[in-house]
Length: 128
Image (cartoon, rainbow, N blue to C red; front, side, top):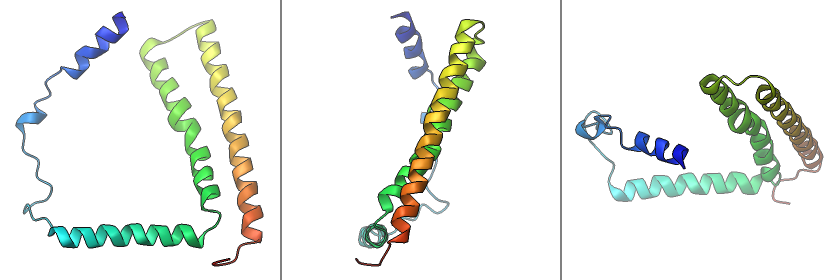
């Protein structure tokens, strides 16, 4: 409970950002609504077309996810926690063991994603 109450104070810190005016661009010009709607719809249509053209799109997404999982979810948070708390003894060894185990899991996911990508690439045909 004390940890939750201690973190609440960070949300109440006044940074002064509310008192500053930060425009979106130098002139304050925005595209008209219809142009923004057309551009955003065209972007979504282009990405949808690319996803349709690549039947192995889910494998590519899995590969990107497996490459980004360990550094963003395990390594960087554990490094930040280590920097703040400076653990020693069994805590440090446990942190290193969990970090190494999750790296192995991530490497296994990368190998599986690459294997699936190679298998699906060999039988790839447009609009099949």
